[in-house]
Structures are given as structure tokens and as C-alpha cells.
Length: 461
Image 1: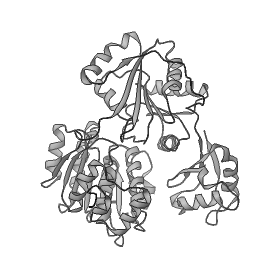
Image 2 (image 1 turned 180 degrees about the horizontal axis):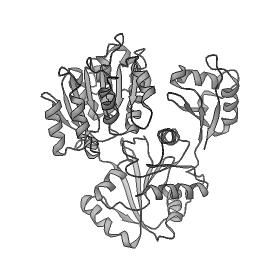
Image 3 (image 1 turned 180 degrees about the vertical axis):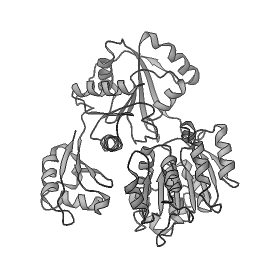
Image 4 (image 1 turned 30 degrees about the vertical axis):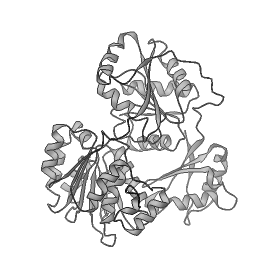
């Protein structure tokens, strides 16, 4: 008897199924099992599922299954609330599409010049993933056409509402053909979501898997600190409870920068994400954290919207947020996919009133008051095993991950297992390399032509 949660029970194209096997995707997650059969049948779907539940693969497989790669026209549009989420969604769809061949996927987000995006749009991408403001700007300039659109996806629609994108969504609808499939995914169901669904969908299949998903296993501590010792206590907490990937939330971007500088002074490889960074800086920060060459990411709540990093070991609140629901959103970044996580909050006496609201919102949280123990681990859990190298060429140079891997490992180069994530962007690329092999990797990349051309390679710190 076949497993009803197996991907091979779906009516997917053979190349998509084969690639899923290569990626190690065998069994569908809860949201995939409930939505994919309906999406593949052509129904509009309104789905509620937690971030990190596998929803990107659900709508990604759905839009790829109906895609005509031989027809160079925009057939799918995915709207996301933030640039970071758009980049992650586009990356996952590229992974799912790699066996289909010649599928063009373009991200359209603010923070970068319009010119290069306009040039890329002239090649008519099959799939556009973007933020509402920038997509609307291209529609207004007639540099993006949605006349052939088949699939329209609103990802994390509740966050789009929180960020004030309702007017942009209304305007984009004027450019979207009526004959289309519309997929709407949201982590919560505020009343405005029902209004959006009524406006953009036709008889949607409503799916809510949040109650059936396994509760997150997050151990929650709060620790007493003073204003003077807060940074030092954060370091102690990181060494006591932290792991390979740790997220520290600050309430202001000034604190973000100060905490990052302090951690770096303590020889901890930390990177900061806040509103004063330009897009290339933000991209590099996220790449270094996701590829495990930085062990700590310090971020504000605004900067971290849309951030989805797998296997996050622990979340630390440099100070508790003033709103209890923000606390819930923060700690929900760890303890995903059935794995255990840790959440630690540093609290001054004058801030303890904030804990009351958290405990009222999460009566079963078992928020424990703890002293910070001295680290007793034999190895430093915060020491990254990888280092990021930046290469001065990317997609516009027709580079592919295989090209960089080949250059690194060719003729006595670094062993394949020493190479981690490879991330390609328009004008540059990043590769994570095991610390012990960095010098050899730099020589390989700097001295060996890639597709007939030499590129600069440098370590990012």
C-alpha cells in the first residue's frame, strides 16, 4: 500500500519527482500533503501554516508543474513582504526547478537600481518573485507584463498587511488576468486576510494545519541582568546555551551595532542586520549566517521579517520586547520541524513587567527564571567551521554553482566535502569553505580561469 504522504503519489512531472528524490524530499510535510493535491488540480487555495512548514515547496511545485519552459513569458508571480523572503523563495524554487531546464526566475525587490532589473525583464522570465512596491513600479513602467500569468501567489500575506502593502496589492490586481490560479499563504488569519481572499480568489479551498502541527519544543529561560553587565551576560548565555546558529534580537538598530561590536571584541564571529545596511551588505550578512560562517546574527524585529534560517539552535532577547506577540514571533524562529530549541531573555528589574504579558499570552510556556551557568563544554560551540569567500562574478557572467565547485576541487584542489553552500547573485557569488582549506581555496579561485576568465576572490569577515 502506497504512503499517502509520499511525493510520488502526486501527479507531478517526472523531472520534478526525480529532482525531489535527489534533494532528499520523500515525504510531504503537513501543509504540502493538504495543499498540493488541490493546487495540482487547479483550485485556488487559502492556507494557514507556520513559517518553516514547507509551504514554499507546496506552491513552488504547483506553479512549476504547469509551467511551459519553452514559452518565454511570465507565467507565475510570487509576492513576498520582504527582500530577504523573496530571495529565499526564489532560491528554493530554483532548487525545485533545476531538472526542468532553462527556467528563468527573477527577483524584483527594492533597494537596488531599476536599470539591471529592466534589462533582465527584457528576457521575459518565467517566474517573478518580488516585493509589492517594486513589482508595482515595473508594472507602471510597462517593463513587466502579466498578460500570460497562470499562477499568482501571496506568501506571508499577514505580514504584507502588517507592513502596509494593501494599496500596492490593490493596484497590482489591476494588471493580473482574471483567468488565473491564486494561492494565498498566511501564518495568521486576521479579518483582513478574508477580505483579500474574497477579492483575489474564486471559491478557495481553505486549509488550516496550524492546530495539527506538532507544538514547538522550546525551552524558555529569563535571566536577571543589569544595564552595566548586559553585554557580558549575553556572552555567557551564548556560551552556555548557544549552538552553531544563534539569533539575538535587539529593540533598536543602535543596540544591534553595539552588541555586534562587543561580541566581535570577544572573538565571537557575529554579524548584524538592521535598517542602516544597504542591500549588498544585507545580502552578505544573511549569506554568511545561513552558510554557517558566522555563529551569531544580531537583528531588529523589522530587519528579521521574512528571515527563514533552518536549524536555528537558539534565540536570545538582548532585552524583552514591549509587546508579547513580538516575543512569540521571535522565539518561533527556533524549535522548528520537530527539533528542540532554546529561547533566553535578558531582563533588567525595570523590565520584568513585560514578562507578565508574555506569560498571559503563553500560559503553558513554562518561562523559567534561571541564573546563567558557566560554560562547561570541551569545544567552543560558537566557533564556525566555515569561512565565506566572495567571487567577483555571478549569474550575469553565466556562472553556475557547478563551475565554482569544479574550480575549487580541480587538480589537487580542496576536497569536495570541504565546500559548503554556494550562493550566486547577479554580479558576485559566495562560497563557504572549511576553515582549514581557505588558503588553498583562494589560490584555486584566484589562479584558475572559470569559463575562460579569472575572477577576484577574497575572504569576507
